[in-house]
Length: 166
Image (cartoon, rainbow, N blue to C red):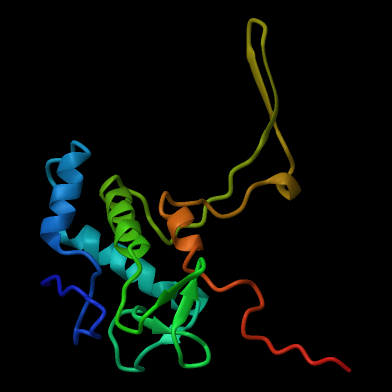
């Protein structure tokens, strides 16, 4: 499958926010010499799966990717105090895709939910003993390296829910 980059113009058939060449350059800068197109496609698909969590709404119902977006009122989208035109892709999005593609390259399943138990005590006295907290204290979803970038693109919890004063 060929990489078709979304530029903000609502490119038909787009499946990525990053070109394969840019991904190869990014990987090489991190010391990874071999990357595959499928890693970039999986990262793009994952970003699209977050569509309902992003601030605003798609510019067009027929656009292939979750971005570009407009504000809930149909106007400009405001993120982090900055105004985004309906033809712009925030810089955090291609950066997040590069990070996610490298995680896929390293064998990470972006959709996998991991539960990690918190170590409550450890001891080494001739033998190792480790105690874990019960499931109530377990940490939930694994965080990808791209989560801090993506957090700035998400709608605030409850955003879009009208509050009516009685």
